[in-house]
Image (cartoon, rainbow, N blue to C red; front, side, top):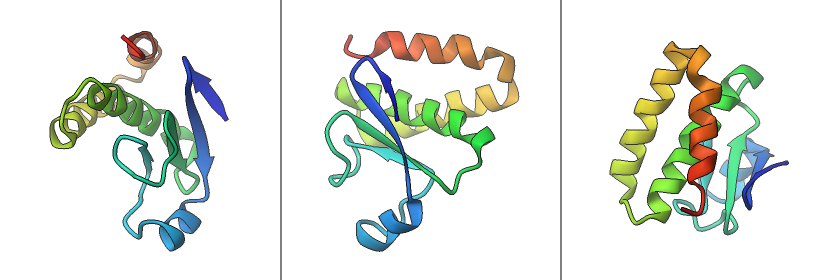
Length: 107
C-alpha cells in the first residue's frame, strides 16, 4: 500500500474483483467511479505488469482528482488518458507530472 496525501493506493487481486464486484474491472479504479472501492482509495489491478503500474496509477489519480472537483467521468477519463499517453511516450517527464498531480490532492 502507498499513500498520497490521504489517498490510499492498493494493489488488488483483479481476478477476485472481477469475480465478486464487477466483471469489467480492468487496470484500476477509484472510489469516485466504483461503489465498491472505499472512500479515498485507488485500486490497481495486480494483472498489470510492474512497469505499467505507474502509468495506470497516474491515470487513476488524475481522474479521481478531477472527479472530486466535480468533473463528470467521461471528461475526467479523457483527460486522464491523454496525460497517461503523454507519459508513456515521454517517460522522462513522469516524475515531474506525478509530483504535480500529488500536489493537487485536496486543493
